[in-house]
Amino acid sequence: MASSKILSAGRVRARTRFWAGVRAQLPILLGVTPFGMIYGITAVEAGMPPLTAIAMSMIVFAGSSQFIAAELVARATPGPVIVLTTLIVNLRHMLYSASIMPYVRHLSRPWKFLLAFLMTDEVYAIAITNYRRRDTEVDSRHLEQWYFLGAGVTLWITWQISTLIGILLGASIPAGWSLDFALALTFITLLIPTLEDRPTVLAALLAGITAVLAHGLRYNLGLILAVLVGIGAGLLAERMGSQRKAAPPPEGDR
Image (cartoon, rainbow, N blue to C red; front, side, top):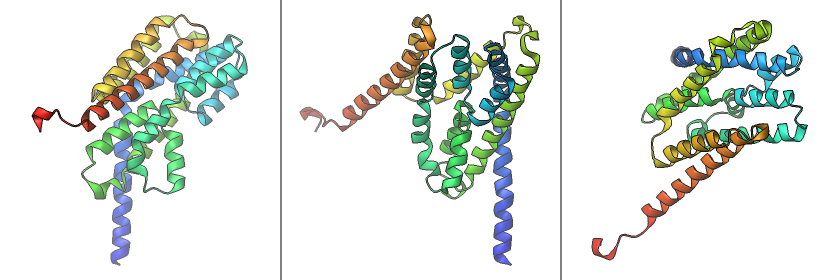
């Protein structure tokens, strides 16, 4: 009897955390939906069959990489360059994984696979903020995967719908709507709360400057360069900070 009550309470809490993740993701959908529509339009204009474009959204589920891949297909870019470009763009997910691993280490392998598939920039921002906010609540952390899942499933469904809308409407969407501007605002909104220390600020600043200066490079190589510069700057700043903390104090301070 007691075990059934505990199980029932756990299910209620899991549902509560799932819907909390859904609600947390809803405001971000205002920027994600236009981005998905732009991807659908870009993919069709690049010559991709509609079913292929939809399948990419369902299986790959990586907005920036899908967008870049569609643009490179339109430019008849060699296949190896497309694969390499999308791979490098998604290297940031390795950093996301390293950041969030302490909070999901206790989960089963199927849970980890599922959350890894659903993790995007937007989902990571929601999930890591929630984990850090509730870090002191050790007991509740064991159900926070449902919060993560709620945010991820919400974004995945929205991404499929917005991709389909973009494919169906195509070029009939007026250029004056400036849907791409909504995407930029969304990523700025996601970025600012994560700038918590000097390494992250430096990485964001140098990556942004590099992206602007290298915007004219072929095959969107400027974006790859910006990613590498941002990662390198952040890692270097973090290592220098660790060395300063580990260095012994001057003789006069001992």
